[in-house]
Amino acid sequence: MMIDRSELISYLEIFEKELHDDILAYWMAYGVEKKGHGFYGAVDLDNKPVLSANKTSVLNSRILWTFSAAAKQYPEKAYESLAHRAYRVIREDFADNEFGGFFMELSSSNQVESDVKHTYAQAFVIYSLCKYYEFAPSEELLSEIQTFFLLLDAKTKDPVNPGYLESFTRDWEPITENRMADNNEPKSLNTHLHLLEAYAAVYKVWKSELVKRRLTELLELFIHRIIRPDGHLGVFFTTEFEETESSKEICSFGQEIEGSWMIWEAAEILGDKEILACIKPLILKMADAVLRVGVDKDGGVFLESTRWGSHIRTNKHWWLQAEALVGFMNSYQLTGDSSYWETVKLTWSFIDQFVIDHDRGEWFTKVSRLGEAYVVEPENDPSPFYRNDWKIDPWKCPYHNGRAMLELVNRISELLENSADANSLLKTKNKQNG
Picture 1 (cartoon, helix red, strand yellow):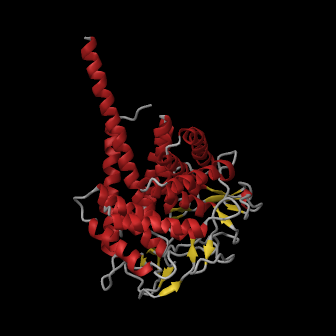
Picture 2 (cartoon, rainbow, N blue to C red):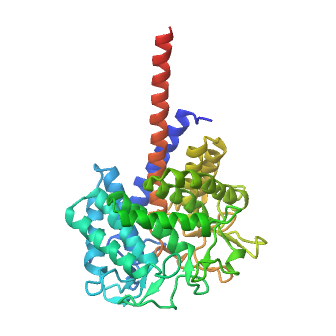
Picture 3 (tube, rainbow, N blue to C red):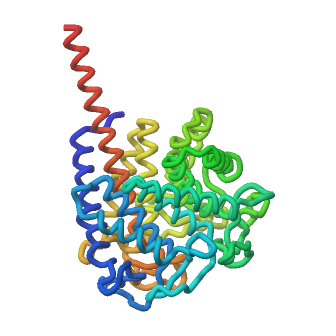
């Protein structure tokens, strides 16, 4: 069912306004160091920088991705300078020029605080470099991306079993501690989802046969190992990439709805018709699984379920709400089923009413089921990485909500263009028949 053009235009304007006047405006006003060449590691709820906070490659690469994407799409806006600034920060402050790759964490004065190499964090850097290349292409930058990909492929890919290893020392020796998993499991959904995202971005700018093969392998890993028969995703895995017993009782709604559109995007970039045909019903099943048990009646998305679904963590984190907008929009575009669009509108209503901080800007990190913003960390339901009393922190970035607004603007624009073309074709046919 086609959505009314006037409604699409109205929401396009809403999402574009949120992107420019709230999200990006906030980061330009409060995220940029006043006495430095980079970005603050944290900013509190009163929009004051936390000068003692460390900086992470994850946050800074996400800033690079967001402002590169915005600068590419809106060249008339003042986003270009922040894209270039973010690239210099990644290249000059976080790059490990001795062993390759990028440091995990720096102090506020840009001294190395953590030299652990997480595959997850490295994936975000190459992902952001590819988006920067789309905005400001150069042979030097492409060579940098190619060299970094070959390093990641050589160092992080499991030489024996499916998938990728999670953590390494500075000189790329695998380590079994400090993995980014709840119980230090050998392999995780989170790392492989964002590696898929990153390698799709690499293949978009560099049509290498090796990149194509690795992207294909990752998609097949999702098809055969990660996506469960019910549409939910496995979360943690053994070295041999079998889901762990404790993982089987968990459903991670945010990663599932985010994955539903990111897996499809990766398959489209790969362009393999057989994989696309196989993936389409799977990612729709993923979206439906989240819609069935992960979306509240007000449109807010719950964090996760545990204990085989008997326990729902009902708090609603900012990034899940953003990813739900894109995931359900993608499902609508693939099916024409307007119920997905209605979910997009409902989730946006929840975001607008409860998640956006209309007084001080940007989005709250987490709200309760009823929409009350947490401004301190609840003892009985801690966040996995980020803090509720900071608006910016090493993990709270403009990437989820900024990217969601960019995606929605582009997807709605495509729908409007297609409907205009269809109307024009219909008028032409009517004239011919008349």
